[in-house]
Image 1 (tube, one colour):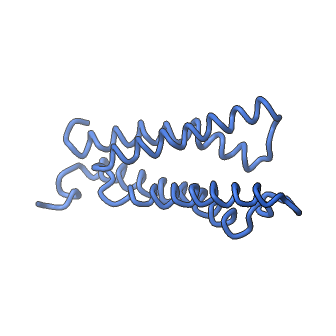
Image 2 (cartoon, helix red, strand yellow; image 1 turned 60 degrees about the vertical axis):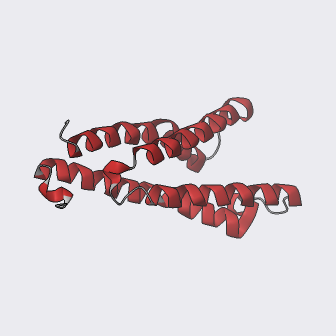
Image 3 (cartoon, one colour; image 1 turned 180 degrees about the horizontal axis):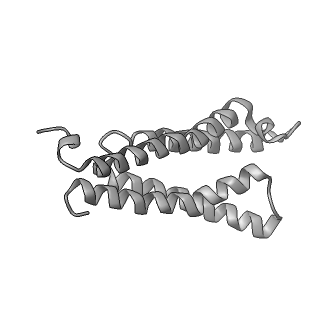
Length: 143
């Protein structure tokens, strides 16, 4: 089977590459934040003497965050075929964003980093799903 580069127009191929590059850049956030939380625990967030249970919980959730980032990277090769994986990751990420929104309402405005995460989870990720749908359609000649 010929490479995708020969199956779609150069402009459509550039859209595909741009989507891949965007996901590669954005996935750095959960990877590095996850690593930071796994290695440093609550100290990553500035907590000096956290309870052991909080440390355990932060490290567990940070491990999940790290896994999310790695899973987003797994979508990059043959991205036009990864609709189910991208949608699942998007739903899980969006759900986390909704939980973060509950925290904002219940507890107050968090730091700038958490507000950035909230924007990524509730705005950017749904836009990536829409963009992926367009790129996928283009690769199948439906664009």
